[in-house]
Length: 175
Image (cartoon, rainbow, N blue to C red; front, side, top):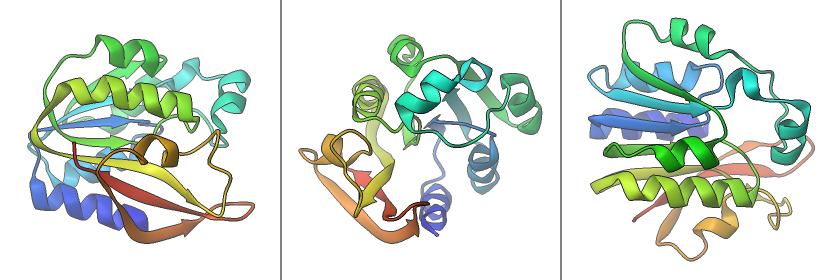
């Protein structure tokens, strides 16, 4: 349900450069690129470098995909994929972007690091969306709640259930 908002924002804004943290299998990237086919896409993920340890640290429950398979899935679009821990890969990234979808690791530390690294690249008027704003779930260690708390933001009133209880929403941040 919440992804309908994300794709609507991409369609509305037709960004020149989309940055997604948490490319995973490429499905959301493909949906965004189909909604804005002239966009340049920058995707960041661990891909095959993910492990049981990183899954535990970030509360990831999804299977892993290789960079090669995702690149093939996104063939035909202007795509640049970055494999590795975003604390390192995003720190080196310096290209301007006007649309950001932050949906990578779930720990507060990783989300804060991703935000600190991404905001350096934002063009004026950039659209910034965070996933993993939790309702009825402890947000001390996981989710973006603590990161966006002191930022000008809007919690989007669309929610999806979380396995095991609670809800997850998207937040739009106004940098």
